[in-house]
Image 1 (cartoon, one colour):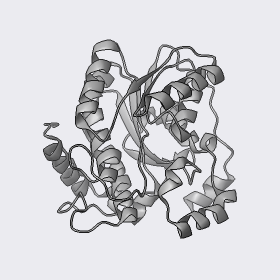
Image 2 (cartoon, one colour):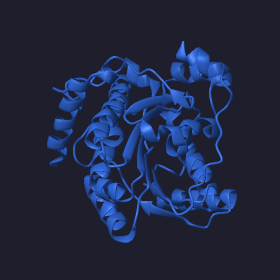
Image 3 (spheres, one colour):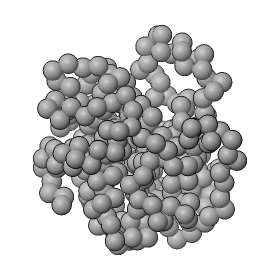
Image 4 (tube, helix red, strand yellow):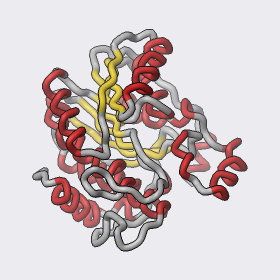
Length: 298
């Protein structure tokens, strides 16, 4: 029902300004990350584009500046598949940035062939969940000092087909790229729920979201039949600008100041799966993540 109501609701838009605010977006050199960067730059924010490929990042930063008229855009190297890169990146941010008002965990890999990160995590859970978990952990004190502030994690409706395999989080006993992707996106929602509890009373709120079925280069690993299906449904899918709207909504919508830990789609609250609301599972995943990343985050 929520989805049907959302179709008939007018398109969301907001004139909210972000002057004097600093926004960090992972994976901002392409797709919805880049569109999010353009929109928030137009609102006057300083934009930090955290990207793995610096050549593509610099070209994208130029595009963001040209489209927004805002020169205050920088790109920095961040490889979410390598905890050493994440730690170096966070160290530089903590050293050089006096504030961080909005952190958008946007980067992701989707249904890729089996591979491992530098730390030995399965690639999808490693980048989509563990990488962003560690990044948020390392930046959370700066975010708290910048309150009111927001932390946004891009999930997917694919989470609803997912389950968390706490005994084999890295899919070593058997790998299905679709299941591994769904697991990582469910992890994003559970992370957001647990994070909201830990940030209560700090002035920092947190949200997860489904951007819509968006035409992005994340589709490159889809199988032939999947790609054919996506071409068939493409008239009903979103382009990157439309796909970025819910990320932007979660970043600027004033009414969300009083909300935290929830899941959004089409610029409105949405229902996540039962597993996505399982606080016991969320805590177990939190503890496992801390253990695997060797961090203590109470």
